Structures are given as structure tokens and as C-alpha cells.
Image (cartoon, rainbow, N blue to C red; front, top):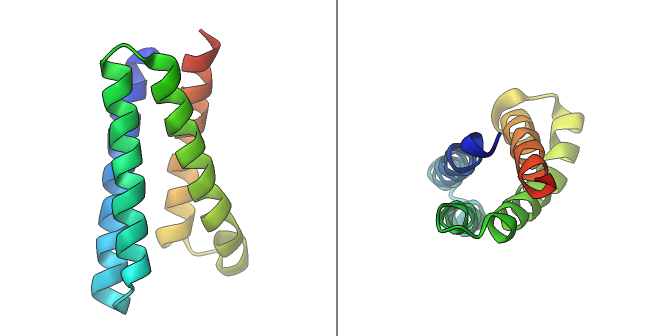
Length: 106
């Protein structure tokens, strides 16, 4: 499962970054852009830490970042039932939390 950790973090970071850009382009939401950049950076740093050998620190940072995004988007998904963007962020975030937890359990 450790081999899935870096690609999962990078993919989630890319997804969050693209979502932030789309939120800015479609709704002129600077908050979406800033949050997307910030969380993509955190997830990128987490992937870098894992690749550098600090698996615990990287997996912890990745899990906390994913949980924060889930906490933000899960209520929106439950309210609207829209897969894009809330459902996707929650689903991929849950995957990242599981992969990070398994890496931390090693």
C-alpha cells in the first residue's frame, strides 16, 4: 500500500488545484483559488516528505489535509448530492485518508 501513497497524494493535490482554478474561473471565487493552491501545496509537500523517507510525517500531513477537505466538502455533498465537485473531493479524500492510515500503521 505504501507504493500507492505518493501517487495518491499527487493526484489529490492535482485534483484540488484544478478544482480551485475552476472555482475561480467559473465563479470568480478567490477563496477557491487560494484554498486550492494552499491544499495542493500541502499535499505536494506531503508527497515530497514520503519520497524523502519521512513517511510518517508525510502520511500524517496528507491525512490531516484530506480530512480538512472532507470536513469542508462532505456537508455540501450531503446537502446537494452533486458529484462535482463535492462528491469527488470527498471520495478521493477518503481514499487518501485510508492509504495514509495504512502507511502510518506500518
